[in-house]
Length: 401
Length: 59
Image 1 (tube, each protein chain N blue to C red):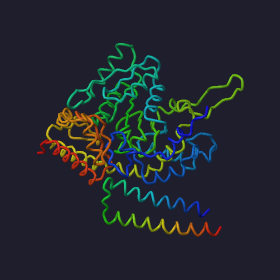
Image 2: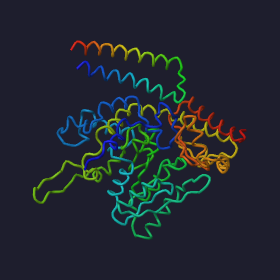
Image 3: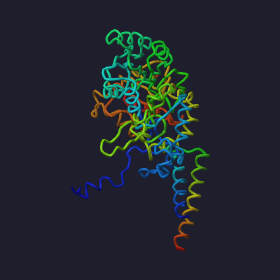
C-alpha cells in the first residue's frame, strides 16, 4: 500500500513540544531519564540500528560478549555498581520482573507483592501465569506498606497452596507517593522463609546509592529510561550467583528438520537483548550515574525545601510518608481544586498557568492532587517552580503563610 | 575524513551549549562560568566551520 505524501510529511522534522532547553519538566517518570551530555553525543554516534554490533560475533555470538564498544565490561561494572553478581540489560523494568517471575515460578504459583506496586508488576506476574497476594498499606495520608505483613502473606499462601510463594516483590520506591520502603525488613523475612526476594528499584537504582547485597535482594530490577539517564527502552535485571544457572540457562531447542541448535543463547533473555542507541546511552551515562548517586542527599534536600515552601500555600499538603526520602512527590491541592470549580478552564487552569510560565509535567486537568518529581533540577529551577506556584496562588487569592 | 570529524566536533560544541540551556531553562540566566562555556563553544565551532569551508572549497 502506498501512503500519501501529506501523511508521510507528518514524520518529517518532528519536534518535541517541551524541550528540556525551554521548559522545566516535573513529569514524575521523566526526571531520572534525562540524558547526560556524553549520552547525547553517543546517540549520534550509535543511533543506527545494530551499530553496537560492528564487532559481533566475537568468540561467542552474543551481545554481552561484545568488547567494542565495551558491553561485556559494562555488564560486569553494572553488576558491581549495584552490589549484585550478574547483570543483564533488558528492554524494560517490567521485562526484568517478568523474566524473574517466569524463571522462579510455575503456573498457579503466588508472588507476594506490596499494594503500592506498579501495574506492570501485576501484568508481569499475569504473563508468567502467577497469582498475586498483596501486602496492605496504611491508606491515606501515608500509604505506608506494612512490611512485616509479608510474613503473614507467606503463611496465607502456604495454607492455601501447601507450598511457598515463588517470590516476594517489594517496590523500593512506589510510583504514587515516592515512599521509600525499608528493603531490609522484607529481606529478613525472605531469608527466614527461604523465598527468593525481588527488589524493584525502578525509581531508586541509578539516582540513589543502591547495594543489592546490603539490602538483601536476590534479584534487583530497574529502569534505564526512568533512572539511569538512558533512552527508552532499557531495563536492568541483576541477580545473585545462586540464581545465575537458572536465569542464564541456555537454549536447548533443536529444529526438527534442520537440527539447528542455539546453545550460546540465554533462553530467558531470548538471546541478545537491548542493543544500539538505548544500550549505548545507558553505557555513556554510566560514569555520571556512578557520580550522581553520591549527590542524592542534596536531591532530597531540594525536594524537602520545595514541599515545605508549597505547603505554605493554603490547602496544599504533601501526601505519603514524611519527611520526604525521595524526589517523586504527591501533593494534595484542595485549594487549587476549589479555584478550578469556578474557573472557565476548570481543572485545566493550573496546567495552563504553569505552562505559561514554562513549567510542564503536571498532568493536565488535575487540581485536587498531582505528582511531581524534582530530581536533577538546579536550586535556581527549584526556586523558579516555587515562585511560579506562589504567583498562581496569589493570582487566585490563596493565602501564603 | 577531516570533514567527518569536523562535523562531529561542531555538533559536540553545540551539545555543550544545549546542556547549559537545559541547566538554566526556562529563563537561561547564566552565571559567568556558564557564559564563558557558551562563548568558548561558539568560538570553537566558528573555527571548525571556517576550516570546513576552506576544505570543501579546495576539493
